[in-house]
Length: 254
Ligand SMILES: Cc1cc2nc3c(=O)[nH]c(=O)nc-3n(C[C@H](O)[C@H](O)[C@H](O)COP(=O)(O)O)c2cc1C
Image (cartoon, rainbow, N blue to C red; front, side, top):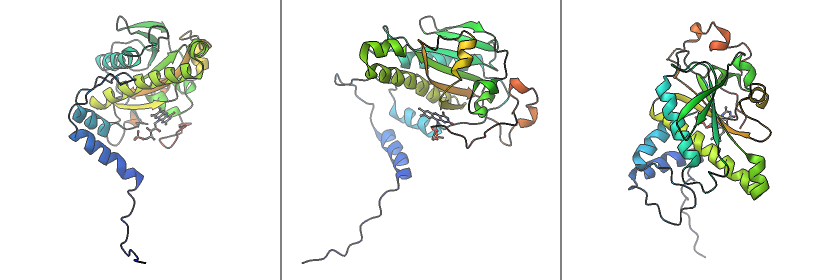
């Protein structure tokens, strides 16, 4: 019997797969979208630009106290709305909505706003006369300048399509958050997808009927905290003050 004494190459550690994937993606010509595509195309025509945004994308758990420019929020909402609706066969029957908790956004009143994807406008729903730390499980997200919450008619979708209806709504909520998250990365903003605001807060403030219109996934967004932090400016509690019960960057419920 011939023995093979060659030492096999060490397996690629999983964490090295992502950079190589990004390198491959950058080198790819523009993706052709065929009829066989079941899911809507992201609209991202330039794989190198996508790879660049993915490289910048990370989960931010700290945010600057400075306000988020209103026009940046508008762009993120437009991307989220598009990703949740265009190309999905069930978009009209089961609309995915986006509500915004604006805490520090230039030109947008502090409070809850409903985003209308058809008219690309924000409609004020209620004031946010509470400590944002009481609206989240992970306190660090209370320091974001804005929180975008996607929601959809899960009970109706489940009645129509069973568990697959729920899966599709989750996909669309995640597509919306992912699109806004990548948009934030392109604009060098700090953002993190997360489980969302506590449903009771949404219910109490009349933001969504959480029994019929279930929150799906959320995005916390703001300007990045400057090097060295600007925590010294966070003296005003609900306007971005870092509460002593913060769980910090290590906290993660996923
Ligand atoms: C669908 C989804 C849900 C997430 N939910 C949370 C969450 O609830 N809390 C949190 O701290 N991070 C959440 N994250 C962020 C991930 O924990 C984070 O992406 C992961 O730790 C990788 O870190 P990176 O994004 O910096 O590469 C979520 C990410 C995704 C994609």
